[in-house]
Length: 333
Length: 295
Image: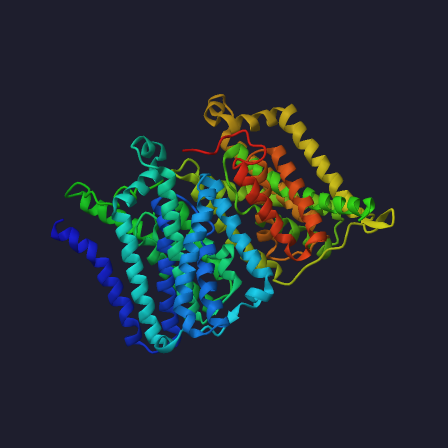
């Protein structure tokens, strides 16, 4: 690994850590801190989702299931027992998400393409229906309010750094996975599952593995957001939540590891800015995404990468990085 | 529980099933013919309902004329959306994912457009003249409008079957599903065929929306509820299978009708349960001829 590659690898981390760790220092507005917190948590959710979609080519429309599960484990345990159950609740939510993914995964990954999308959607909607209808247990449409993290975490700034640390650690871990032989297998599965089998790799086992990992980190994001908002709602299970995370990933660029993270920040920013002027922000997002899907399917980060590659291409041949393959323009393939 | 009650419940299930079939048939038609997954199909259903509302409640047009206007209007709108946007991504690598994304954008845009034009409050329209009453079956009441819906559904099924199997456009449509390239080589304008099929499919959705408008209140959220149900129907029947959609709709309609009687609170979850169970044992749907268990 030469120094320029090393720099390339560390640069996004430095930018990420710098920007986000400075947020509480630069301004004291609680609202902006919450906004940054949301960017972090949704960023993690989007990156974990993209391990499925961008890396492995499995478009799940049901990641809200795990996100909601993480949030409800944390929120309900705090609500029923007390704040000291915040962290254990988060842990239990993560474990539960892993186990649920282990149970549902084998059913959903049997089918491919649109069927996989619809089946994951159905499972998530089933969970939403149960949460919505089981009023006595979950609070139904009222959701649960007043979920306070325990002790020192109750301070918004401390909780922010807690989120930052967990999100960075998780993304670092997911990045390691993406660059591991397992990650390479996943990208191969996305391009040609049949050949992966010829090479003696088990397609379904790898798919199940990443499905579980993706669900676990979605649950972590859900648990974290319960502490940011101090409340949970059945909408966390709803299909629009799964849809939102897909839009974030596509906007940022599903072919880039950090694309979904950027996309999450952008969508939250757009919602915030546009939402101040009009209630029809989903129309704006829909229009932006329509243009993205048709003209820039590689997403913001992907298009930037392509532009840079084109500039560089005049001098030297394309550098082969782990993401070179992934960043191929779908229109030209 | 006596036989009369069961029969009434069956008929009300059949009404729901007919409406579901009308929506799902459009969904399955574009998927079967063009491999296009139209996630926004429910939104076209919703526009149909709003068109009917505008015609009947605001312009005082006869309901049956309004039904035709809504179906054709929604169909034309669908053709516009297909030729402006959807057509541009055909043949892309990983087309399926991009179709879902693009049509998801349609949902976001159409749902907000509807809110801008018609507002967020509930709209309702009266039942058409001559169908506002009900008939007695034993000592139980059955609204005549529900019976009309069932009859219209039957007419559409038979008409669709005749067109698809007995006419030249029907043959071209079926050929598009099998081999687009060969059809193109034979001088058929395949992109135009796709646009027309998409128009017919969304028109069917709009028709279902207009038909359902007197039964259910017209709301901006209507599209979302419908798309999930019709997805279940289509997956149950095997995607792209016309008759499968009909049977899937029947199963879901009846399951809902009877679940409401026995477990009213959890009734809405039963469609999901049916789907999960079917997919566990037969992932390709009840009637699919296509193998989808790749790898």
